Image (cartoon, rainbow, N blue to C red):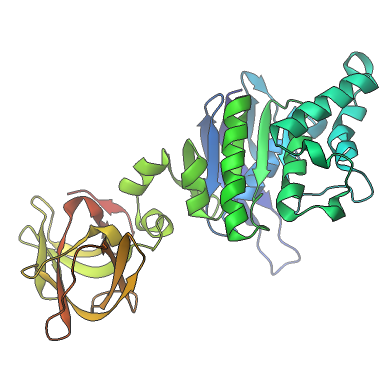
Length: 363
Protein backbone atom coordinates (compact mmCIF):
# COMPACT_ATOMS: atom_id res chain seq x y z
CA UNK A 1 0.00 0.00 0.00
CA UNK A 2 1.54 3.30 -1.10
CA UNK A 3 1.10 6.06 1.49
CA UNK A 4 1.16 9.75 0.54
CA UNK A 5 1.23 12.68 2.94
CA UNK A 6 0.53 16.07 1.39
CA UNK A 7 1.42 19.30 3.21
CA UNK A 8 0.47 17.75 6.53
CA UNK A 9 0.42 20.14 9.49
CA UNK A 10 -0.58 19.56 13.10
CA UNK A 11 -0.85 22.49 15.49
CA UNK A 12 -1.63 22.15 19.18
CA UNK A 13 -3.23 25.29 20.66
CA UNK A 14 -1.54 27.03 23.57
CA UNK A 15 -3.02 26.95 27.04
CA UNK A 16 -3.97 30.33 28.38
CA UNK A 17 -2.82 33.69 27.08
CA UNK A 18 0.90 33.26 27.74
CA UNK A 19 1.46 29.91 26.05
CA UNK A 20 1.82 29.96 22.29
CA UNK A 21 0.50 27.33 19.93
CA UNK A 22 2.91 24.49 19.12
CA UNK A 23 3.35 23.30 15.54
CA UNK A 24 4.32 19.65 15.98
CA UNK A 25 4.27 18.77 12.26
CA UNK A 26 4.88 21.52 9.75
CA UNK A 27 4.00 21.20 6.03
CA UNK A 28 5.10 17.56 5.93
CA UNK A 29 5.03 15.98 2.44
CA UNK A 30 6.25 12.45 1.78
CA UNK A 31 5.49 9.49 -0.46
CA UNK A 32 6.08 6.06 1.09
CA UNK A 33 6.44 3.38 -1.60
CA UNK A 34 4.37 0.21 -1.42
CA UNK A 35 5.92 -2.54 0.68
CA UNK A 36 8.81 -0.48 2.06
CA UNK A 37 9.94 0.10 5.65
CA UNK A 38 10.38 3.80 6.40
CA UNK A 39 12.10 5.11 9.51
CA UNK A 40 11.00 8.46 10.96
CA UNK A 41 14.08 9.64 12.80
CA UNK A 42 14.79 12.62 14.99
CA UNK A 43 15.28 13.88 18.56
CA UNK A 44 12.51 13.98 21.13
CA UNK A 45 9.89 16.59 20.25
CA UNK A 46 10.65 16.61 16.51
CA UNK A 47 7.12 15.49 15.55
CA UNK A 48 7.77 11.89 14.49
CA UNK A 49 5.25 10.28 16.87
CA UNK A 50 2.68 12.94 16.03
CA UNK A 51 3.11 12.07 12.34
CA UNK A 52 2.47 8.42 13.22
CA UNK A 53 -0.67 9.35 15.16
CA UNK A 54 -1.92 11.35 12.17
CA UNK A 55 -1.41 8.28 9.97
CA UNK A 56 -3.27 6.06 12.42
CA UNK A 57 -6.15 8.50 12.90
CA UNK A 58 -5.54 8.95 16.64
CA UNK A 59 -5.12 12.66 15.90
CA UNK A 60 -6.62 14.82 13.15
CA UNK A 61 -4.40 17.13 11.10
CA UNK A 62 -4.84 20.87 11.23
CA UNK A 63 -4.35 20.93 7.47
CA UNK A 64 -3.10 18.68 4.70
CA UNK A 65 -4.20 15.28 3.37
CA UNK A 66 -3.30 11.60 3.79
CA UNK A 67 -3.77 8.99 1.07
CA UNK A 68 -3.60 5.20 1.31
CA UNK A 69 -3.12 4.30 -2.33
CA UNK A 70 -5.57 6.59 -4.15
CA UNK A 71 -8.01 6.77 -1.22
CA UNK A 72 -8.14 9.98 0.81
CA UNK A 73 -8.35 8.77 4.42
CA UNK A 74 -7.67 12.15 6.08
CA UNK A 75 -11.03 12.18 7.90
CA UNK A 76 -11.57 8.43 8.04
CA UNK A 77 -12.03 7.05 11.61
CA UNK A 78 -9.08 4.99 12.95
CA UNK A 79 -11.05 1.73 13.00
CA UNK A 80 -11.75 2.02 9.27
CA UNK A 81 -8.20 2.75 8.13
CA UNK A 82 -6.85 -0.78 8.29
CA UNK A 83 -3.73 0.08 10.28
CA UNK A 84 -1.80 -2.00 12.79
CA UNK A 85 -0.24 0.04 15.58
CA UNK A 86 2.45 -1.13 18.01
CA UNK A 87 3.01 1.17 20.97
CA UNK A 88 6.23 1.83 22.88
CA UNK A 89 4.78 0.26 26.07
CA UNK A 90 3.24 -2.75 24.23
CA UNK A 91 -0.28 -2.03 25.68
CA UNK A 92 -1.15 -5.70 26.22
CA UNK A 93 -4.18 -6.72 28.29
CA UNK A 94 -2.65 -8.19 31.47
CA UNK A 95 -5.66 -10.41 32.33
CA UNK A 96 -5.73 -12.08 28.90
CA UNK A 97 -3.49 -14.82 27.58
CA UNK A 98 -1.20 -14.32 24.62
CA UNK A 99 -3.75 -16.10 22.42
CA UNK A 100 -6.56 -13.85 23.65
CA UNK A 101 -4.45 -10.70 23.19
CA UNK A 102 -3.68 -11.63 19.60
CA UNK A 103 -7.27 -12.63 18.84
CA UNK A 104 -8.83 -9.52 20.41
CA UNK A 105 -8.80 -7.31 17.23
CA UNK A 106 -10.56 -10.06 15.30
CA UNK A 107 -13.41 -10.37 17.80
CA UNK A 108 -14.61 -6.85 17.01
CA UNK A 109 -15.39 -7.55 13.37
CA UNK A 110 -19.01 -7.15 12.42
CA UNK A 111 -21.31 -8.12 9.56
CA UNK A 112 -19.72 -9.72 6.52
CA UNK A 113 -16.26 -9.42 8.12
CA UNK A 114 -17.26 -11.47 11.17
CA UNK A 115 -15.09 -14.55 11.72
CA UNK A 116 -15.78 -17.93 13.29
CA UNK A 117 -13.84 -19.04 16.36
CA UNK A 118 -11.96 -21.55 14.25
CA UNK A 119 -10.92 -18.87 11.77
CA UNK A 120 -9.77 -16.55 14.56
CA UNK A 121 -7.80 -19.36 16.21
CA UNK A 122 -6.03 -20.16 12.94
CA UNK A 123 -5.21 -16.53 12.21
CA UNK A 124 -3.85 -16.06 15.73
CA UNK A 125 -1.72 -19.18 15.36
CA UNK A 126 -0.38 -17.95 12.01
CA UNK A 127 0.52 -14.56 13.48
CA UNK A 128 2.21 -16.20 16.48
CA UNK A 129 4.20 -18.45 14.15
CA UNK A 130 5.34 -15.42 12.17
CA UNK A 131 6.86 -13.82 15.28
CA UNK A 132 7.95 -17.19 16.72
CA UNK A 133 5.90 -17.27 19.95
CA UNK A 134 3.73 -20.36 19.28
CA UNK A 135 4.79 -21.99 22.55
CA UNK A 136 3.71 -18.95 24.62
CA UNK A 137 0.06 -18.82 23.61
CA UNK A 138 -1.39 -19.80 27.00
CA UNK A 139 0.79 -17.48 29.08
CA UNK A 140 -0.20 -14.04 30.30
CA UNK A 141 1.87 -10.89 29.66
CA UNK A 142 3.23 -10.83 33.22
CA UNK A 143 4.88 -14.19 32.58
CA UNK A 144 6.80 -12.95 29.53
CA UNK A 145 10.07 -11.10 29.02
CA UNK A 146 10.11 -7.66 27.43
CA UNK A 147 11.14 -9.07 24.08
CA UNK A 148 8.37 -11.67 24.17
CA UNK A 149 5.79 -9.02 25.06
CA UNK A 150 6.97 -6.97 22.10
CA UNK A 151 6.46 -9.94 19.79
CA UNK A 152 2.93 -10.40 21.12
CA UNK A 153 2.19 -6.74 20.39
CA UNK A 154 3.50 -7.13 16.84
CA UNK A 155 1.47 -10.33 16.32
CA UNK A 156 -1.67 -8.54 17.54
CA UNK A 157 -1.05 -5.74 15.02
CA UNK A 158 -0.38 -8.19 12.18
CA UNK A 159 -3.22 -10.64 12.79
CA UNK A 160 -5.79 -8.49 11.01
CA UNK A 161 -3.46 -8.08 8.00
CA UNK A 162 -3.38 -4.28 8.10
CA UNK A 163 -2.83 -2.12 5.05
CA UNK A 164 0.07 -0.43 6.85
CA UNK A 165 1.96 -1.23 10.05
CA UNK A 166 2.94 1.59 12.43
CA UNK A 167 5.64 1.07 15.06
CA UNK A 168 6.08 3.78 17.71
CA UNK A 169 9.57 3.36 19.25
CA UNK A 170 8.95 -0.37 19.75
CA UNK A 171 12.46 -1.21 20.99
CA UNK A 172 13.07 1.55 23.54
CA UNK A 173 12.16 -0.64 26.55
CA UNK A 174 14.53 -3.47 25.63
CA UNK A 175 18.16 -4.03 26.63
CA UNK A 176 20.92 -3.57 24.04
CA UNK A 177 21.27 -7.21 22.96
CA UNK A 178 17.52 -7.74 22.76
CA UNK A 179 17.11 -4.53 20.76
CA UNK A 180 19.49 -5.88 18.16
CA UNK A 181 17.71 -9.22 17.97
CA UNK A 182 14.22 -7.69 17.86
CA UNK A 183 15.02 -5.15 15.16
CA UNK A 184 16.31 -7.99 12.99
CA UNK A 185 13.03 -9.80 13.63
CA UNK A 186 11.00 -6.72 12.68
CA UNK A 187 12.88 -6.49 9.41
CA UNK A 188 12.37 -10.20 8.71
CA UNK A 189 8.64 -9.97 9.45
CA UNK A 190 8.22 -6.87 7.30
CA UNK A 191 9.95 -8.49 4.36
CA UNK A 192 7.98 -11.71 4.66
CA UNK A 193 4.61 -9.92 4.84
CA UNK A 194 5.36 -7.09 2.40
CA UNK A 195 3.30 -4.68 4.52
CA UNK A 196 4.21 -1.01 4.18
CA UNK A 197 5.70 -0.11 7.56
CA UNK A 198 6.49 3.17 9.32
CA UNK A 199 8.99 2.85 12.17
CA UNK A 200 9.46 5.75 14.60
CA UNK A 201 12.71 5.97 16.58
CA UNK A 202 15.23 8.46 17.95
CA UNK A 203 18.00 5.85 17.59
CA UNK A 204 19.77 6.49 14.29
CA UNK A 205 21.53 3.11 14.34
CA UNK A 206 18.15 1.34 14.53
CA UNK A 207 16.71 3.39 11.70
CA UNK A 208 19.69 2.98 9.41
CA UNK A 209 20.03 -0.76 9.98
CA UNK A 210 16.50 -1.83 9.00
CA UNK A 211 14.93 0.96 6.93
CA UNK A 212 14.61 1.17 3.16
CA UNK A 213 14.13 4.92 3.54
CA UNK A 214 14.86 7.23 6.45
CA UNK A 215 13.26 10.61 7.09
CA UNK A 216 15.23 12.90 9.41
CA UNK A 217 13.02 15.41 11.22
CA UNK A 218 13.59 18.51 13.32
CA UNK A 219 10.91 20.78 14.81
CA UNK A 220 8.21 19.10 12.72
CA UNK A 221 10.03 19.70 9.43
CA UNK A 222 11.67 17.12 7.17
CA UNK A 223 15.40 17.87 7.02
CA UNK A 224 16.26 15.09 4.58
CA UNK A 225 14.76 11.87 3.22
CA UNK A 226 16.53 9.11 1.34
CA UNK A 227 18.22 5.73 1.51
CA UNK A 228 20.12 5.42 4.82
CA UNK A 229 23.60 5.20 3.28
CA UNK A 230 22.87 8.04 0.87
CA UNK A 231 21.76 10.35 3.69
CA UNK A 232 24.81 9.39 5.76
CA UNK A 233 27.22 9.99 2.86
CA UNK A 234 25.53 13.15 1.59
CA UNK A 235 23.90 15.10 4.45
CA UNK A 236 21.85 18.12 3.42
CA UNK A 237 22.80 20.23 6.43
CA UNK A 238 24.79 20.24 9.65
CA UNK A 239 21.87 18.94 11.73
CA UNK A 240 21.62 15.77 9.62
CA UNK A 241 25.40 15.31 9.62
CA UNK A 242 25.48 15.60 13.43
CA UNK A 243 22.48 13.36 14.00
CA UNK A 244 23.66 10.40 11.93
CA UNK A 245 26.74 8.43 12.86
CA UNK A 246 28.25 6.65 15.84
CA UNK A 247 30.59 8.04 17.10
CA UNK A 248 29.17 11.40 16.06
CA UNK A 249 30.81 13.49 13.38
CA UNK A 250 33.70 15.78 14.44
CA UNK A 251 32.84 19.46 13.91
CA UNK A 252 35.41 22.25 13.49
CA UNK A 253 35.46 26.00 12.92
CA UNK A 254 37.16 26.41 9.55
CA UNK A 255 37.98 28.92 6.85
CA UNK A 256 38.06 28.62 3.07
CA UNK A 257 40.70 30.84 1.51
CA UNK A 258 42.31 30.61 -1.91
CA UNK A 259 40.72 27.26 -2.70
CA UNK A 260 41.94 25.61 0.51
CA UNK A 261 40.23 24.63 3.72
CA UNK A 262 42.00 25.83 6.83
CA UNK A 263 41.37 24.41 10.28
CA UNK A 264 43.29 26.61 12.62
CA UNK A 265 46.44 27.75 10.80
CA UNK A 266 46.79 24.55 8.75
CA UNK A 267 45.57 24.02 5.18
CA UNK A 268 44.09 20.53 5.46
CA UNK A 269 42.28 20.05 2.12
CA UNK A 270 42.05 21.46 -1.40
CA UNK A 271 38.51 22.82 -2.11
CA UNK A 272 38.80 24.40 -5.57
CA UNK A 273 35.92 26.59 -6.70
CA UNK A 274 34.64 27.24 -3.17
CA UNK A 275 34.22 30.91 -2.28
CA UNK A 276 36.38 32.35 0.47
CA UNK A 277 34.37 32.38 3.67
CA UNK A 278 34.28 31.14 7.28
CA UNK A 279 32.74 27.65 7.36
CA UNK A 280 31.86 24.82 9.66
CA UNK A 281 33.86 21.73 8.67
CA UNK A 282 32.68 18.28 9.75
CA UNK A 283 34.74 15.10 9.47
CA UNK A 284 33.36 11.59 9.94
CA UNK A 285 35.36 9.52 12.47
CA UNK A 286 36.42 7.18 9.66
CA UNK A 287 37.67 10.16 7.62
CA UNK A 288 41.07 10.41 9.35
CA UNK A 289 44.24 8.73 8.05
CA UNK A 290 47.13 8.66 10.55
CA UNK A 291 50.16 9.79 8.59
CA UNK A 292 53.40 11.27 9.81
CA UNK A 293 53.44 13.91 7.08
CA UNK A 294 49.71 14.62 7.31
CA UNK A 295 48.62 18.28 7.18
CA UNK A 296 46.30 18.17 10.21
CA UNK A 297 48.03 18.09 13.60
CA UNK A 298 46.23 17.38 16.88
CA UNK A 299 47.15 16.87 20.51
CA UNK A 300 47.23 13.13 21.20
CA UNK A 301 45.06 11.99 24.13
CA UNK A 302 44.96 8.20 23.88
CA UNK A 303 43.63 5.15 22.07
CA UNK A 304 40.52 3.03 22.63
CA UNK A 305 41.09 -0.50 21.29
CA UNK A 306 37.89 -1.94 19.80
CA UNK A 307 39.31 -5.15 18.30
CA UNK A 308 39.07 -4.83 14.53
CA UNK A 309 39.23 -1.02 14.79
CA UNK A 310 40.57 1.44 17.29
CA UNK A 311 39.60 4.98 18.14
CA UNK A 312 42.30 7.60 18.36
CA UNK A 313 41.37 10.33 20.86
CA UNK A 314 42.78 13.76 20.12
CA UNK A 315 42.10 17.45 20.65
CA UNK A 316 42.30 20.62 18.56
CA UNK A 317 41.52 24.25 19.47
CA UNK A 318 39.14 24.60 16.48
CA UNK A 319 37.08 21.53 17.39
CA UNK A 320 33.64 22.30 18.81
CA UNK A 321 33.86 19.28 21.15
CA UNK A 322 36.50 18.54 23.79
CA UNK A 323 37.56 15.31 22.06
CA UNK A 324 38.12 14.30 18.44
CA UNK A 325 37.33 10.65 17.73
CA UNK A 326 39.13 9.15 14.75
CA UNK A 327 38.42 5.52 13.83
CA UNK A 328 41.38 3.76 12.23
CA UNK A 329 42.24 0.16 11.43
CA UNK A 330 43.37 -1.93 14.40
CA UNK A 331 46.53 -3.01 12.57
CA UNK A 332 47.53 0.53 11.64
CA UNK A 333 50.06 1.86 14.15
CA UNK A 334 49.48 5.32 15.59
CA UNK A 335 52.73 6.76 16.90
CA UNK A 336 52.46 10.23 18.42
CA UNK A 337 55.48 12.52 18.27
CA UNK A 338 56.00 15.00 21.09
CA UNK A 339 52.44 14.39 22.26
CA UNK A 340 50.93 15.13 18.83
CA UNK A 341 49.49 13.03 16.02
CA UNK A 342 49.16 13.98 12.34
CA UNK A 343 46.31 13.06 10.01
CA UNK A 344 45.40 13.31 6.37
CA UNK A 345 41.68 13.74 5.70
CA UNK A 346 39.61 11.68 3.24
CA UNK A 347 37.82 14.15 0.93
CA UNK A 348 34.68 11.98 0.76
CA UNK A 349 34.31 12.04 4.55
CA UNK A 350 34.54 15.78 5.11
CA UNK A 351 31.65 18.22 4.63
CA UNK A 352 31.46 21.99 4.62
CA UNK A 353 28.50 23.98 5.93
CA UNK A 354 27.56 27.66 6.05
CA UNK A 355 28.61 29.02 9.43
CA UNK A 356 25.28 30.81 9.98
CA UNK A 357 22.62 28.66 8.31
CA UNK A 358 24.16 25.19 8.62
CA UNK A 359 23.32 24.46 4.96
CA UNK A 360 25.72 22.29 2.98
CA UNK A 361 28.41 23.89 0.81
CA UNK A 362 29.27 21.57 -2.09
CA UNK A 363 32.89 21.28 -3.19
